[in-house]
Amino acid sequence: MDQLIDFSGSTQRMSALVAGTADDQLDAPTPSGLTVSQLLGHVHDLAVAFRDASAKGESFPSSSAPDPAASSLPDDWRAVIPGRLDELAQAWRNPAAWEGMTRAGGLDMPGDVAATVALDELVVHGWDLAVATGQDYVPDQAALDAAEEFCASIPDEPEARQGLFGPRVPVAEGASQLDRVIGLSGRDPGWSPAPTK
Image (cartoon, rainbow, N blue to C red; front, side, top):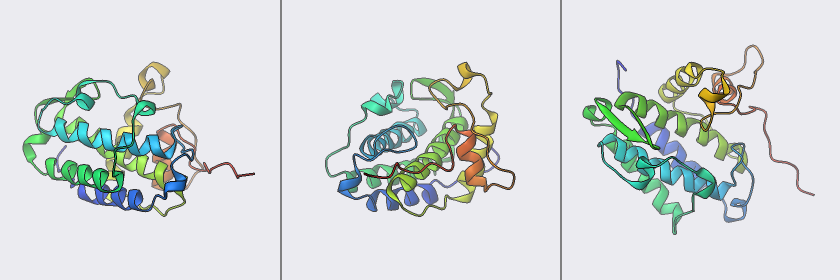
């Protein structure tokens, strides 16, 4: 990657979404197939995993394949998750984080690829959380650009998308860049929670 991307625009947006999530929304569904509670636990875990990946360090989240459905919500999550997100942003300010090889989610990858994956996770899961909890969401532009390039690079073959993305969802011509990214990630940009009875 020619230019390093500052993670703080994405992590601050995610922290704002976390703060805007109400207790009575934790059991609500999200476009990812997880509940809001599971999604928040996954956001915590990915922040730790990619924070450690920046330093080429080992942690449970970075050295094992993720199972978002098994993610548990930390105690005092409204303080803990933003704290981990701040650490993530700080870690990727170091140019050395973007160089060499590292490991995240049980996979070995170049540092710059790990950074792109982390940015994509923040963009897509930011959207997941926003639409599930009825919050506004405008992703960081540099992160959105990186996410679009990354999502577009994943082949259509199911084996290439297994465990990462679902099948691509077509979007209308003239769709917003965020909708394109969401469709490329295998989600329906028009998703909304089922109406309560």
